[in-house]
Length: 379
Image (tube, rainbow, N blue to C red; front, side, top):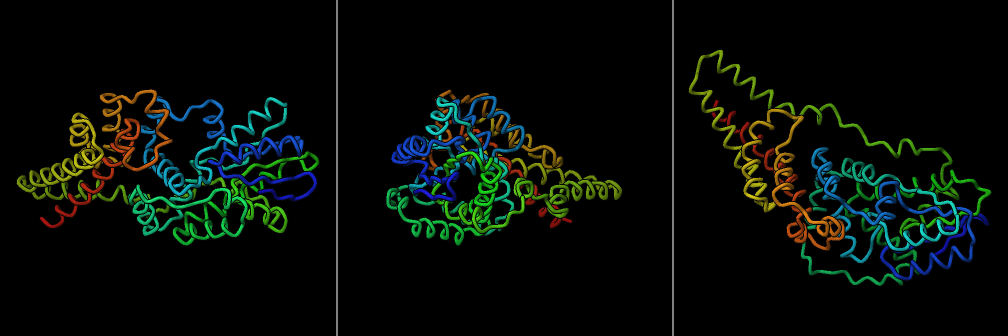
């Protein structure tokens, strides 16, 4: 699908998993003879694309240390869901983008990266989604993997009406995610394209679902530069920042009160309830992730301590142990972002490390709240 904005700017809409899109890229570069080829990639996805890397052991360890396991899992689950539906809206770079980069570099054509950083997009989407939207997405991803949508890629690429219906369906399913993944990216891509020298012949290769939005912003949209605003991750509110500290403050406050009262029995009971609830639920989370027995023990031992320190997380320790005792192979790491279903995350060792990290943290968090509720009930 092609949109002519002006004699020097042409948009090519592609499906990132369509073979015909690769041929369309070749044809358009040869026919249009651009001075610049703009591709729907950010720097990190570009580097992964041109080097053929998806993940390595050092990167996996960094994900654990920086607490990014949930984000990486979300990115991978979204990509798997898109493949199941027969569409990929840019969460993973496709063959046609690689072809565009390779051809451009071989011909000395300048390549411009015009997409927003994938981590920024995911963080903004997660922050803007309501709680019920998050549960709906997770529920959808946990659905029947055998249920596949009957989607004709060629028909979709030829019809804007079908594309509009698909985009509107996502917005209805999750307004918060739809705003970030579609509307914001349409505006971001358009503004990046607008910054390219208008005297240069530019071919912009983007997901077909973004064509209408980009065209609107380039032709009738606001000329105000909002790239900085669209690149920011919204700050957490004071309330959300304070929540992780409430339980430690409550526990230490209760401990201080009991020590002041000189009630040693209650102090013993406090530590018993706190340790048991944290250890058991963190271990259960790790077991659900099918963690190694050493990772499960680590989760149980770490959770009562890390729950009192919001700067630490039990999942980080359990994930590290899982990484060391059941080390992913090079093939596991290479295949991780190509997984097709939720069940594959358990069978893939790299996916299991991230699941151990995320589910242990979730279990530890639940354990802290259960323990706090138990202590309140026992007062």
